[in-house]
Structure formats: structure tokens, C-alpha cells
Image (cartoon, rainbow, N blue to C red; front, top):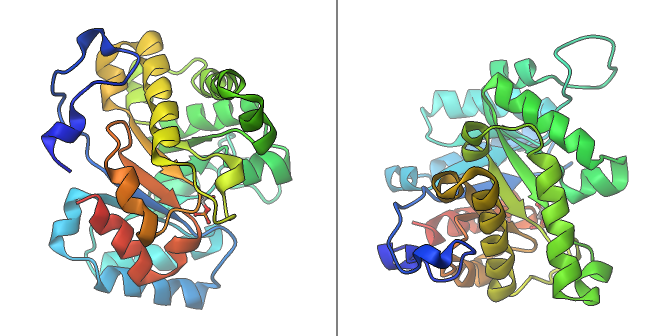
Length: 278
Ligand code: PGA
């Protein structure tokens, strides 16, 4: 990824077009979803860690296993003195108490999580997570020192309704997620554009579609928090990213990495995604 890739020509803040902005550190996240028992998770983490050379420090690489595997994966990374980072797939916003089945931000901190996915479309769609819930989770994570990875993305019907409904839908999710969050919290967040119609379907957004939405997201963040914050926030694409298509996304100026599901379960494939952003 070269400096030219960072040349601003397409974001909504293009009053400042064509100046070179400081490079954001790319980030590649693997969302393991509800896959891998603890034994299997250890094997996968070891596999990824074994392939993980020093060069990859240049791309922040985050493993997001199921809650129950976090400690075992953390042990693998600690044993290997690995630069790989740990992330969770969800959190509850309360500090502690009678919330059966829930996991608090402090629990994630203690196990070593630096990141936590929030608002994934599967959480929203299958478990009824609302924009308000996402916002509470974002605030709780930031207070605990964990960077939220905020997922936004439209369904097929919205996409088919056209560009404007798609943009409005995503803007609404973004505004809700950042409600009450200050500029420094926003700058520490990652926003993942994950069109629902592309998740686990083998259908990807075109790199141009992903770039267009990410430019819009950066523009909204700029309007809300100012140019510097918008330039600090990392934006990633998710939805059937694989070694065969990741190269196209790397070229897009507002994309700083990817969030992979299926490809994250295979160590060589996942490493290919990381290498693509070197
Ligand atoms: P996928 O999942 O790569 O399997 O499409 C991505 C995601 O849901 O984060």
C-alpha cells in the first residue's frame, strides 16, 4: 500500500482534495463466529501464529474467536510472544450483575482483548440487537479501553432500492452508533462496512461500491468530528472477502483493511488477506 493510495480524491472532505494524508495502519480481522471448539481454536491460532512473521506487524491482525476460546487463544499468543491481537465478537454494556449469559467489557480487558465487534448483522438480525444497543456497547467498550469494531451495512432490499436509500440507511446506523461518543473515542473505533447481502454468500460488493460507501462514512465522520478524526478512523470491508478478491479492495483509498468470516477459519487463506495489506 503506497502513499499514493492515500491520495484524497474521493472522500466527502474533498475540499482538501489531492493532498497526501498520513498513512493509517491497516487492520485485518478474523471473525470466527460460532466456529471452533477450544481445542480447534488453539490449533487455528497456532497455525496463524506460526505463519505470522515480523513483517506482519505493519498490518494489525486481530483474531476474534468465540468467548469460550478467548483465554486459550490468548495463551497461544502470549506463549509465541505474537504481535497478533485478540478481539471479541460481542459484549454487554453493564459492568457486572444479574445478566445471565452476558460478558462485560472488564472481562474482555482481563483476557486481553484489544478489539470487540459490535452490531454485526447476525447479532442485529438473529438476536435483535438495536442501534441503541450498539451505541451502549460502543460507549462501554471505549470506557474500558477496548476499540469497538462497529458493523454497518444494508440488506439486499435497501441496496436494490438505490443509492440514496443505501446511503441513508448506513448514515443512520453510523449516527446512532456514535451518539454521545467524543472525537477521541471515534478515532479509536474501526467501522466495518458489511453489506448483509454479501456476508457468507460468496457475493462481494464491488471494490467501487465498498469505496463509495466508505468515502461516505468518512465524510460523515468528518462532518461530525472534523477532518483529523475522520482521517484517523480505520474503515474496513467485510462480506465474502477471500485471497482471490482481496487485492481489489486494497486499491481503494478509504479502505484500511478487511473483516473476514469464512476465510478467517483457514490459516493460509487468512494470512493471504493480511499479506495483501502489507
Ligand atoms: P464472510 O463473513 O467473510 O464469511 O462473508 C464476514 C462477516 O460476517 O464478518
